[in-house]
Length: 125
Figure 1 (cartoon, rainbow, N blue to C red):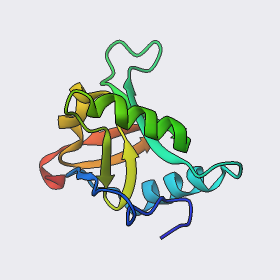
Figure 2 (figure 1 turned 180 degrees about the horizontal axis):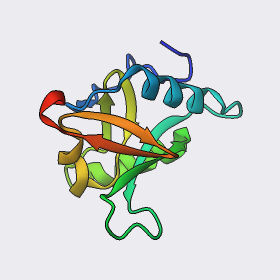
Figure 3 (figure 1 turned 90 degrees about the horizontal axis):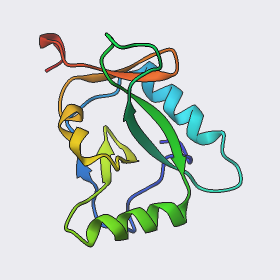
Figure 4 (figure 1 turned 90 degrees about the vertical axis):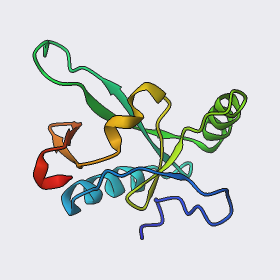
């Protein structure tokens, strides 16, 4: 596993997500995380709609959260009993938009341009 992918050995277990990462998506995510040299990043996924894509389904953008942001988000959400830290097919990820967690429970993630989309077709369930 890449050094850029944070090990969860010293922290409480992440809540598992059921979605899978095909090799090409995993490589792109690991390359993104490895590009940060001034801090140890944790992958974040943010849900939204691409500009001008009214008929397009929502999709996910990648962000890199630093250690203090991770700690602050976890503490904030834990204050009302929620978690934002998940295991995405072996990669630690923060998903602060709790209303969209269910979309990451089955299928696979794939890139289209710079955005991640969920393929939940029958073949990937």
